[in-house]
Length: 253
View (cartoon, rainbow, N blue to C red):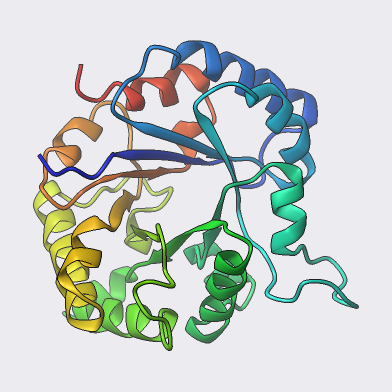
């Protein structure tokens, strides 16, 4: 087992009103209060961030956002800045999620700028990468991951990247019920860590937490977490129910 502290992160996507979010956060806070040797983060919609931050106050659960824009302020209708997220209580931000890439035009270049904005505000980026089903079937998984990592982290030095978290989310496994086998996940995570070592240096690569995302549930999380380069999970649907999500934090039990 590595010295990296596992991170179980919940991406609530476009779910829950303010009252629903605070109720779920409060329930989760109670359910995971005895969890040890694991970090927990939830990313509600923007409209609930401040309210949820109040509920989580005094708990070990971290608050994250689902996206940001790279400018600090200005005429950018509908966007939100890193400083606004910090002010709302966030310490993490998800960047480059496949749904942002698919529906909202995120590219490796814009992801790079968003990571830079997050780091400038002392937000920990959860940098998402992953291949589509067509890319995997064509044997292009590693070349896709290579490009996403190189371009997403272009012009950074390892000391600038701080506590960067990488999330490997095979697009074909997100919300489909399909899950990469633990061997497939380990193979991809090992490739990513080796690439980080090539691009930066061994100590940094060994410290980066690489999460697996894609239909993670209580019945498969333990097998995934037994893999040496799987350091946690970025969870979608299963994070919406506090009872279900809390079980992931106790994956060792």
